[in-house]
Image 1 (cartoon, rainbow, N blue to C red):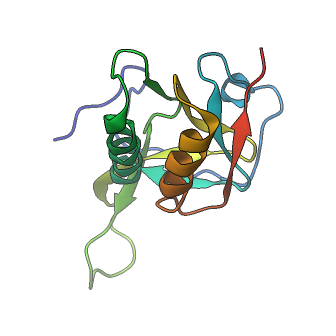
Image 2: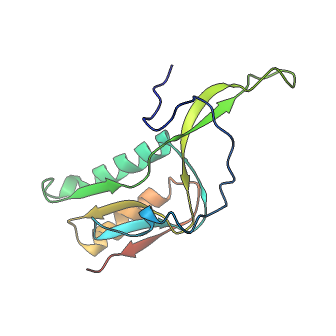
Amino acid sequence: MKQLPNNYIYKKCHKANYSYTKLLDRKNFFSIYGQYGLQSLKHGKLTYKQIEACRRTIKRGFNNFNKNINFICIKVFTDRPVTKKPLATRMGKGKGSLSHWIAVIKKGQIIFEIGGISSLFAKDILKKCANQLPFKTKLIKIFY
């Protein structure tokens, strides 16, 4: 059985309306760490495999630079369980078993932040990363 995150008591939860955006929860909508970020333009869902694929793409782009200066900040975490019933199962007889975990992405949320490289390389790296995501994103530059 997969391990639950610390803030969950039960394995299964209700299916949420992912298009709904709470205006009070704006924690990941502002950049703190990086110089460049990847911001979502639509709401959606991310699995662990998609986040890991983006992380590897960014790491490969950093190979040409000094690894002590560059950094990645992943601002999303897969904390919502998704259940699935087996194929050819009739209706009823309870909820299905745990299939995988997802991260709910809201419109305008910053997903990745990178720093320590020039704007030309950051644009190239984040464009490759955006191709692996299931929704539209844009590159943002953070000014201090």
